[in-house]
Image 1 (spheres, helix red, strand yellow):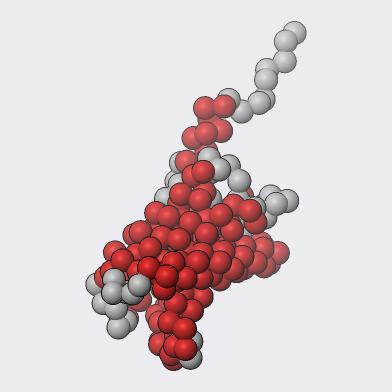
Image 2 (spheres, rainbow, N blue to C red; image 1 turned 90 degrees about the horizontal axis):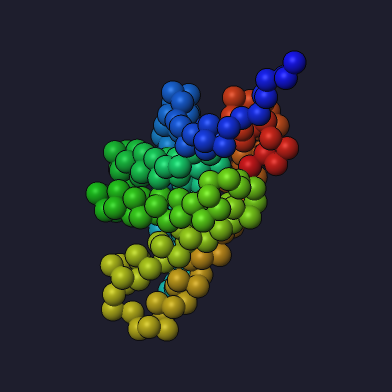
Amino acid sequence: MTSTSRTTPTGAAGRSRTHWRVVDIVVCAVVGVAAGVALWAFGIAYRPLAEGLAFLAPLSAVLNGGFLFPALLGGLVVRRPGAALFAEVLAGLTSMLIGTEWGVPVLVWAVVQGLAAELGFAVLGYRRWGLPAALLSGACAGLAVGLMDTTFYYPAWESGYKLLYVLFSVPSGIVLAGLLAHLVVRALARTGALSGFASGRSGERV
């Protein structure tokens, strides 16, 4: 008698990676709101920190990764296409509603940053969620915010300053967003808080 195969069809496996469960939506929303509060607090600290780097204006880009953290955290926890964008936009909306000096444009930046973070995961087909994926996604988001800032906030800067700003923004996204989110998700996974997610069950963790 021929035994029935228990292997998962390729199509079903693909759907499981892209299909959002209710718990995915809820957790991603919680991550976005919580990160939004942290983003608001970081926004308050940003100004004095940036002023401390005023001796070389483009150095302020080393702080950019802090604004990208929600996207990476949402993406690495939920592991679904769109999670990074969802978390980043919700974090931006939350910080805007609490009150930030940047106002409504925060949402525009959040959309761009979230999409850029998604690009890093999409390049790997939403199949890899380890440290390299986190760093790649952080780099993409760092590049995006660097280009956005130099285009709209600092259009009068000379090209050399703009290039330096972008070059400082990319590693900031890698470290403050990618690496930090990777470490946070690993820590959460060890507590069992992510047991309902692949990020909490897999040996790779993120």
